[in-house]
Length: 258
Length: 172
Image (cartoon, rainbow over all chains, first blue to last red; front, side, top):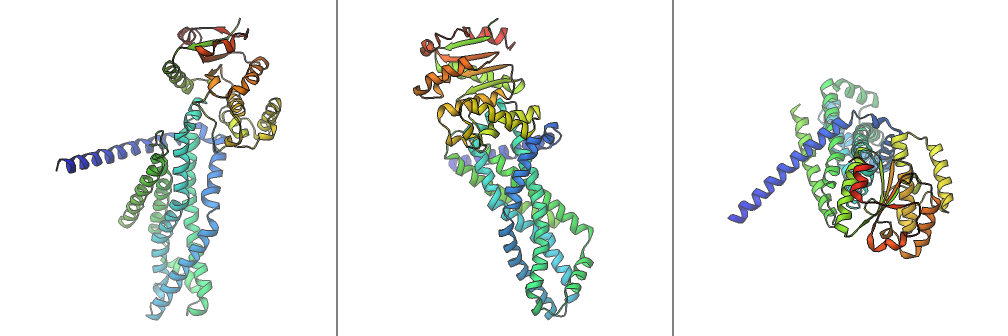
């Protein structure tokens, strides 16, 4: 019994410490966003490189996944709705599923698998090898030089890739299955635009910004908990990915509430 | 007036204590530390490592920065390492990159902490040649007292107590 209480207590303390630490990390991020060094060419270079690693290198794999999901969505859903004579609702269903739910979620999962894990390992190694101390010793703010460009690139890439997902999945899905569908492309686009409204765009933007922030900030924060042992890196990776998974669920729930 | 000092420590715990003091000071003002505890950054090339501080603080252009770095690397016979990563350098080359990184920060003081720990004995002569040839206005070497004889011929350096240097020169 005593052991259970101790375990519960220690996990409660650990959780509280995480939330407190992560909250102050977020405050530092917001404060850092107004730092004049952020416009420095060296920081811009880090930002551009991270955009390349996060948003550009992923495009081939991302396009294939978008088309496959587009086939299932546009093909499956559209033919299902047409079968039941509900072709007028095709746009509404596609907008709701693709833009509001699937695009941010699939993008977040793919970015988590590809970039968040890489960023956790990179920052954890830098912390363990005292390379972050090197930056501090050169009077370089690691928040401005290392963390903020990565977080901002996460937000930008999340937005861009989620938008690309919407286009590829709808257009690609339609083009591949056009012979099988009894509706024209013009009709499909028209119904999609009819179903489009400000609330959908707002939810999409909120989800994209929050997920973009979480996919980079949680791995960075988790990586910074590493001390001197190599064995702490997989633990940081595991904790970071788990926290990120909870964050994705939280954002999905927030999206439902708006 | 000689502004180059040699500071000896009797035990490594004292060196770590001094290093922490200096690291805290380096955060606020510009004091360049060349030490094993401050490694070069693994995911940056040699040129990027050297220029990181110059880009951040002095907004040096890429072209101008590269020109300076290549001429400096040539001086040490390391121009072929301009795009190398830290794992492609030997101990002494790593030391030189660390020094150049700090030099481009343009600090008031350059502090070498336990330089003898940063390279193997084979590079001893090279290190002395480096100290003789490199024109550093204000530099401090913090070394273990057992290595005192290694610096006995360094006329440009005078021995000083760490606390005196910290209070008189650094105004800590």
